Length: 322
Length: 248
Image 1 (spheres, one colour):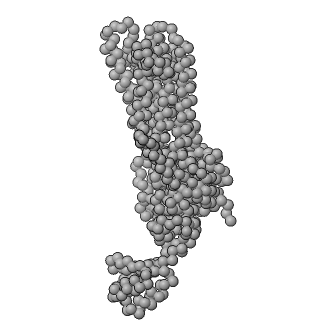
Image 2 (tube, chains in turn yellow, orange):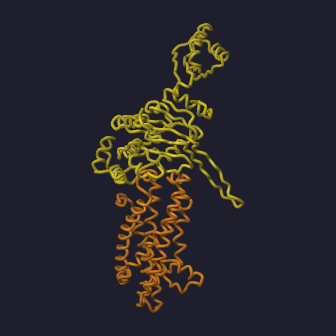
Image 3 (cartoon, chains in turn brown, blue):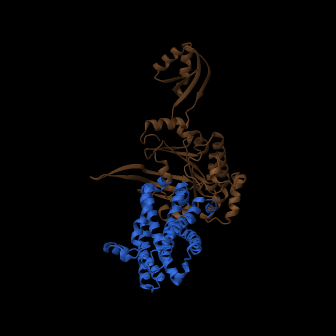
């Protein structure tokens, strides 16, 4: 078993906001993260998933030391974050769609300044290496404000690998990118991971991306961990499959079959989708034949991580899954 | 430093506003000079403006880097590096000193060319004058940084106005003696007032009261220590309340 390089124990964050009024100050408490514990193993990519407000970003920010936890402990590389922050951050880096490097500096200047901040030996050589690794050489003299969002994200990613981090936090790195740019960023993540065995904590709202990249997933809702498993493992917890087909004749009969068996049906344009437990699929196909429902272009889709996400997020489930 | 070469705002901040003040007050003092008050009123005005620019400049040089990083949405990148708050403050102070040296050199040359005011006529005392004014500017700057970290952008207007609350009590142009009694008490608690009083003494060929400069320095050390404690406290509060993220 691989060793844990990040240990989070009973981590809780309660935000207290005060609204001042002349009579009294009203204080509201919001529990953003509620006593979560988890480990991240060396070399793995762990996905942190959950709907908006689940506590993902607060968790990441506590691991980075940007928010002080209300209670609980975080240790990285076996060191307590509270008192060894500086030592830990030398080997950690971070990239997010929601942060930017100074817009009035060029790519090279930004990377060089960051290299100095991380006290990297031979900073100019390292910047040259990183520029090559992320195919940024041709644009190194461009100011950040001249770059497209795809190139800005690539620069943010390049910055996050400058200090060759043992542990990297990526907060929605591909949000706001077109599919081609997002795939290019994912390819870089895979390449770097293969080359350096970097441990990565990854958040994204793109479930296909998480399935593609992450080894393991932790699912948060209302500040609590409600499931942890591999992406495939989480998807398998959803027993409902989708049968999609084009009905040529017998749509009314199909609806009646679905109603009798308490399945779900959705008609969209020429296609009809029936949501059905995986085990009932043979029975369903049999019934279509018996009732002489004629169809073509049938496809059966297994549950995905997206299905797990949608079901869990919409149900706002308390810790009962996994 | 990279940004300075291309950033018009920084150049304007370093040279333009200080020049506007110098020219405006220089012309005003020329006008007042016609009333023949018996001392070099131009030197009082120009000296006052240049030395007041030291306070304003050193205060802005503490505040602008923080605001710049926040406006650039780079604060999180910065605070996730291994750099500590103390190291960040030291870097800001050193860079600020460099910028202030450039601004003051330019302004002093301009004052000499336009109004024949020689800042070096303050002799050795230019060093304690500058030191005290810079320390006072840093004190105000650190308090403003603390307020911005804790309360965010909504406090900006108040924060920028803070230095001008002190301005009437600093006795930049007029002597402390012309202030009402209650204001004189406050004025004696403002380190800059001792510097401006002694600047005027030099202009009117009186003896400099070195003890006053020592009082000014001790007050500055006290205030600066309190300001740094305040800044550290506000930074801790910002981390506790997640304000750093909101500022970004």
